[in-house]
Image (cartoon, rainbow, N blue to C red; front, side, top):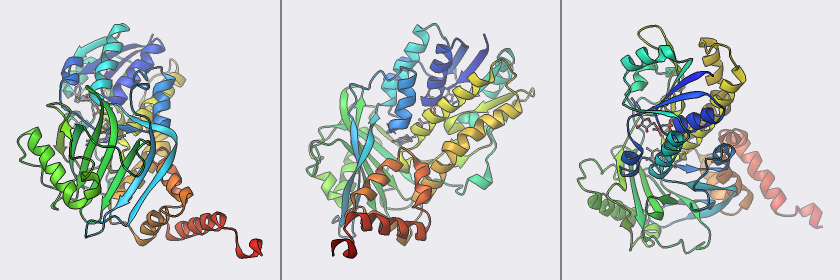
Length: 421
Ligand SMILES: Cc1cc2nc3c(=O)[nH]c(=O)nc-3n(C[C@H](O)[C@H](O)[C@H](O)COP(=O)(O)OP(=O)(O)OC[C@H]3O[C@@H](n4cnc5c(N)ncnc54)[C@H](O)[C@@H]3O)c2cc1C
């Protein structure tokens, strides 16, 4: 059977390793951390995944936490005014539920499963020199090492990367004790609180190492008032600052958080990175080729919550390209075609939408977000765009498309004058 080396035990690397293993491939997985180190370490993401991405896990029967994790039925948007009131506040209904399973739980569990199923696990932070040596004995080497140092093997694709600096400062806290949202106490939802000119607060339910919890996730425009987490020394200080900023900019969310406590010592994360698209094929010093996977090749800002979704879609797409290739060599044209298939179906629409959301929203987007408060179909469509960002192409980017769409929905929401005569 064909031998495949996967470097990196995150969403994409583990999903691919488990998928290939289940099809009888001889898979070696290199991880720079053990399952226990991941489980007891720091949170890495907010990892909210929507139905299509979750279905890839169901297809491989690795959806081990589906029954325990909160089922997220809606996605809401609130917009803050300068006086910290909330002129816009609505909830869109998701067609299929979303879920967030703390990557510490999921990756540690999947790593154990891979080893229990007889997979070869190497605990080692791979260097380019390691790959140069090891890759010769494999039919294919996949680099799924996220935003780690191995990305230096993959050149930046300047034409597809409009930003060369981070566009948001990120600050995450996992908490117990958040009250349900009074507007829809029985509906689990992701809430996107937009604070124009300042940043965004995302609040979402998750399953973490200590059970059900909620995540408070600030995305701050660099240099602004939310860009204040550098130099914070303790998790307690990080949460206190998170709550202070909520009180100031999103008091309706702060009102739910008066009893909030961190879930554990590793429950906070702060950082920033520049969104980037890279060339998918890395050339090793000895001439060998490796193929980049998920964040290694397309790393978007988490403002649209797409990275884990894209990682799952990338892993599923690559798995099918590998299976369909049979015994033929995994050469450069195959690598290019494999990446292109992922790029054009997932990477490109996600990158276009995410980069658009990082900028100042144009008037027609503000109109759409405002209209969603009155027109449920608009709210629902926006919410379901998180599952299928390619849908935004039809109505979101072009002012005329947006106006046509709103007119169409408004017309079907009310009987027209002539039909009621
Ligand atoms: C604050 C924040 C919030 C986010 N929220 C969301 C969200 O709500 N929804 C969503 O879909 N996405 C979200 N994302 C993005 C998402 O977490 C990532 O895009 C996704 O995890 C990428 O998966 P991956 O498999 O490419 O890489 P990763 O998950 O980063 O996995 C890479 C793995 O490789 C390991 N590694 C690195 N270097 C080496 C090496 N040299 N040798 C061996 N192993 C190595 C790393 O330790 C890691 O385990 C968020 C990200 C952040 C930072």
